[in-house]
Amino acid sequence: MTIFLLWLAVILFLLTCYLAYLWWHPARRSHFQVRLTTLFLLFAMVPSVPLLFAVSSLATSTIDMLLVPEVEATMLAAMQAMKQQSEERAARLVAAAQQEPATAEMLGRWQFDYYLTWRKTGDELQLSQAVARDEAARALAMTFTPERISESWGQRDSELLAQAGARPTHCRVWLPASAGEMALVGFAVAPEITLTKERLTQALRVYNSLAMIKERALQGELIWGGAAAMILVLCLLSVLAARVLSQRLSRPLEQLTHASLQVASGNLQVQAEATAKDEIRQLVDSFNHMINELRTSREKLVITERLAAWREVARQVAHEIKNPLTPIQLGLYRVRQRLDEAVVSQTAVQESFQSIEEELASLRHLAEAFSEFARLPKAELQPGNLNEVVQLTARLFQGAGGEIQIKTDLAPDIPPRPFDREQIKRLLNNLIKNALEASLAPTGTITISTRRADDKVRLTIADQGPGLSPEMLEKIFEPNFSTKRGGAGLGLTMVKRIVEEHGGTIAVESAAGKGTAFTIIV
Image 1: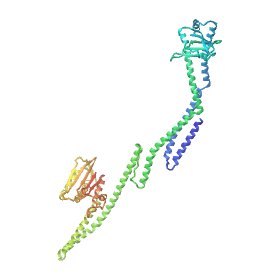
Image 2 (image 1 turned 90 degrees about the horizontal axis):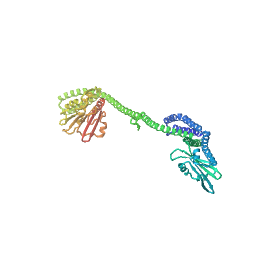
Image 3 (image 1 turned 180 degrees about the vertical axis):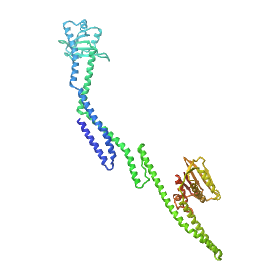
Image 4 (image 1 turned 135 degrees about the vertical axis):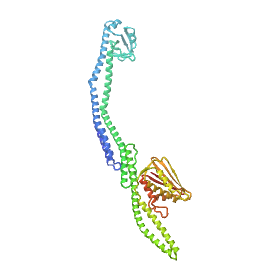
């Protein structure tokens, strides 16, 4: 028990040092792992220490109970008594043979199989008498080697004989017969006697084995040492299991904590990683999805705020520009009437006023664009077929671009989608008008196509114009950006807003000399 308590104290000390190292070490501080390891150790040690203590005590007590010294002495005494009984029986026959000559009839009467005597002359043995009850007994007697008697001359001894694989059924005893002679007698043994002797021999062998185990166990305290080793193994397995489990749980949680701090600092591009395939992975995926949604929402919020600001600017600009337009036009009208009556420099003055009128028309166009952008209403979505609106709008622009052809390629299997009919018309008007203005060749083609995209519709408007540079593509949807002289830069901004209000996406592809294509998915 001493070694058990000593090892238990050593194990507890090592575990305490390990937990303190995990708790306080700056580089490996893991309070979660310490708690989990402590919990696993409690689950392993609280039931196992008392159980192993009880089992070890029970095993020691059981061995002590089985190995009572009187048991061995009793078994040895019983075996010695059986041997002595056989030798006493043989001694009685030898004594009778000294009184009368030994004959086969005498052996039958005494229930012996054979009687042999040897005389020793110097170092040589001579068979002086050999009597057997029958030939089988004589043959059995001749199997004895006289050297056995020579080795134990003058002493009593016996042995049990048996055929190969069978239980002993014959007893052979040699003992002193008279001065200078040794006798050998043999007789049959009852099966019960041989069975009893075998059982005693087996029990004595087991007893000796247990005694050897007990001696080694008591000397080296093997039982208590084994119990301590079992506790050590349980502790190591508990620490290993807690370490593996805590790493699988704590690493994703640490990544989530780090990602949360990044998000709190304003970085919405961070993504947590997880290699597990259980609920932890679902938690990480949900966090990443939340960050993606948050980033998308913030981008939409920025766009919405920017559009709201531009809408207010557009409203003010439209108000400021519209006010002087009417008086200017009236003044020009009166001046033109008076100039018609004048004689000098009428042509020059009229040309000047013509330039003024063109600029005023440009200002009016700008004001109307700002006003239209500011008045864009909220979309009212109604289910319908997008192909009908595309065909109607394309038909209105046929012939508006001279030789430029407007070609439609509409898929008949597109699903019905909810959309605002008027806003989609406005979207198509802006894109087709831009495509007509961008087309260089008088015989170019503008292609409008629709395709099914799962449960949505993909609308593509492509022209054969000069294309756009990468720098232009980055700013193409920004307010106040235009590639046309005198343009307000609000048309594509309004197009993007319409697409977003329909819950769709818009993308643009352009290559120098190959034209531009707008792709809308709604």
